[in-house]
Amino acid sequence: MPAEPDNSRAENQPAPDPRSRVSVVDEQPPRPAPPPGADEGDYRYHTYKVYPSGRPDAVEFVDTYKSFGRARVLRGLNMALPEGMVSMILGPSGTGKSVCIKHMVGLLYPDRGDVLVHGESVPNMSDDDLFEMRKKFGLLFQDGALFGSMNLFDNVAFPLRQHTEKGEDEIVEIVERRLTEVGLAEAREKMPNELSGGMRKRAGFARALVLEPDIVLFDEPDSGLDPVRTALLGELILEIHRDMMDDAKAKGKVHLPTFAVITHDIMSARRVADYINVLWKGRIVEAGPAEDMLNSENPFIRQFLAGESQGPLNMD
View 1 (cartoon, one colour):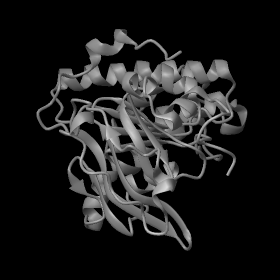
View 2: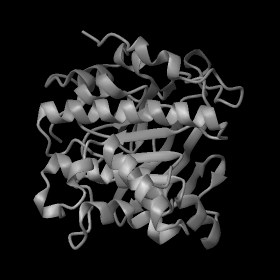
View 3: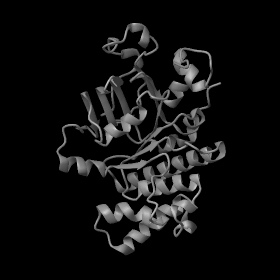
View 4: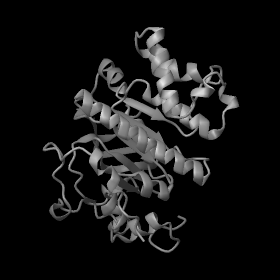
């Protein structure tokens, strides 16, 4: 059965914004043609429905194509990450999820189409603007991506020392606060090889937060974790997002914090997601608030979110 919606987080969600997308399920544009080289049958489960989020988009992919040689990865992708929400990007392996992250931060550029961050085109940015735009992002990679030659404290402090002119006293205050938030205050002197896999991920999370980013990207953060630690990491993501929302509102920030999680773990999506994008064959099948997606009638969505063997998705 679909999970019950988590109404306890509703009070932390911002009110609908008049800038939000107007795409709604019963006002869909005409069904697009399949991408070059594919037939209609390959995309018969792609309804392209977008259930409204009521938020402006922090990140938006607009008819984005990307190939690597003969491998066509993004094939006319239209996808958005609503501002102020925890979004999940779900889909089978090899369908382009991690490639999306590289496009958001300008490490890859689309062959066709566009990628927008807070309404600004990433491919059309100058080098200086791209450098500044990247400061909006915090990234948590699968293994934490810690520097092996630095202790935990220096790993977390690295972005502050590299990209700001803050004094050491302020850096110490920020780093200690972030380490406390992720439960690693007592491990500040440890080297990465002394940390467990879960501790390295939490350390990477702390480092991703020190520059107070508007958008935090998690690339399969639950990879290699057991179910209990996966659940605890999900709780930590929600807790920190809630705290960042409260802080952003109190400070009157222009943009509310947006989290985007790439994962294969369906239980994480059920526990953590406010908004879900389901990606398959380089396009969005459907997207919308978690409650709508978990109750979707689409056979592919139902199979994938239930983790069942029978359905449109097979071993091919």
